[in-house]
Image (cartoon, rainbow, N blue to C red; front, side):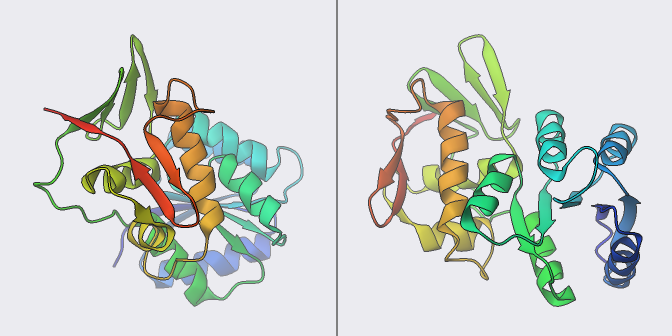
Amino acid sequence: MNMASILVVDDDPQIRRVMRVALVASGYIVSDARSGEGALEALRKNKYDLVLLDMNMPGLGGLETCRLIRASSDVPIIVLTVRNAENDKVEALDAGADDYVTKPFGTPELLARIRAALRRSPFPPNNLSESIALGEVVVNFNSRRVRKGTNEVPLTPKEVDLLRYLAAHGNAPVSHTKLLQTVWGPDYGDEVEYLRVFVNRLRKKIELDPSSPRHLLTVPRYGYQLQVSLKR
């Protein structure tokens, strides 16, 4: 039994019912909400390990709900939508989602995505200190916080995993495929748009000038690398 707690947010009662049956059968604890407003209320009252969020809801839409959740929580969010264009994926990821699943989807695919969102990346324990210094910016992996002078900003678990993996490789380039398969899971590898969005989000948090990064660098047609000095 997985015993992770999942909040399903969808305005269609039949979809909520089907997903509840499938998730409970797989060992998850399931709650549901039929609107974005209901999801925010549920998250204020309870702690969840993951949110499954439909993008196409009346009232407070899925994208705005995702932004509001992410503004106050680092809970993993998987968005569910009938749209499959790359710009729709980027928009959802940029709103704070960790992953994106297109309807209709099979139960095995959804369960695989949930496992990927809940998993934490393996890192060699002796290869990295608790925090890293990026010029004037300090990243603390344990507290998942970035300190710029007197200001602090939080990092989501996936942002931490991505940053830690790059830092663990000692300023060496890491390929898109390796980053995706390590941070998201072995079923990933072609979703380069995920990395573009997450790298852009990280640059806004760790770079003094995100438009001209000095630390989180793009390696053209290959991947990314982090220029870092260890802080102990």
